[in-house]
Length: 317
Image 1 (cartoon, helix red, strand yellow):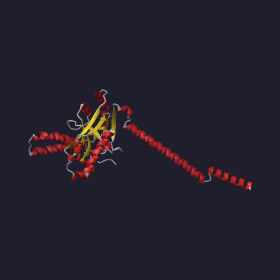
Image 2: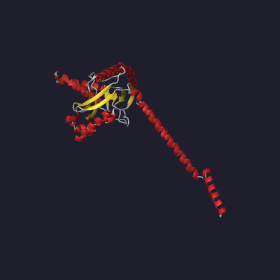
Image 3: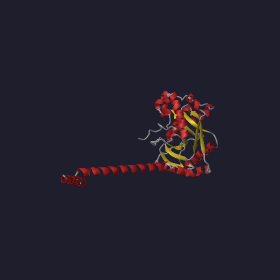
Image 4: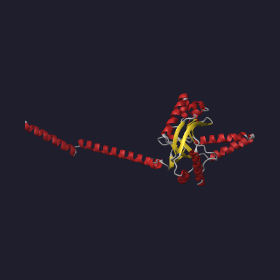
């Protein structure tokens, strides 16, 4: 059963919160009348109706050191407030969102797949063969609604921002809507109140004191090696990661690690071989039992052998 829209994926919400926090400073400087506020709300509603992101470009987090460290933080928070267990993001879903978009048809999905494929050569040009280590350190939040791990500011993070901007331009050139104009803030979400409607009624804000001890914690490095075009709405994979339409792989892990398509294909072959072997074994066992119960040659030979033995025994008496 497909997931309900935006129930478990609040990538759009996170982006909106980030944008709101940036815009709030500007809004404080501007005085508006009641009518202007109402008109602004109506325009925003109309715009949101026309544009609701349902796909995004993901940078998956695969380093066990990072995922294990985040899970330790999650456990510590839950120990202090059991209610927040419903707010925790599963480790299989950990990622950094590069950009969001709205794809309204199979044709637009195909165009987005092509755009991602076209992005690969530009990403490789920016990388220049260098290994990019993304360092995750420290915890922050969006309006006390979303908790996330920060990317340490360094040259590699700057390069990631350049990649995001380049990819955004490529998608836009193909006519794909890629979100509002705002600064790209890479982050790794591990907790959000919007995962549960019931939780939002109980908890209005996440107390930052719950993770105070981990605010400057170093979580580990992720080697940049893959981007995925993922759906916010389609059913997630068994490991908790999002449904992928397409991926591009580059860097050191490209030769060493198979992509998702190869893993799926291998899994299917293993399952098919196991099923075929089981069916063959079952058929052989069924045929043997049938021969033993219907007077088949196998049973006749056994009976003849038994009769011969009895005759031999009689003669020897």
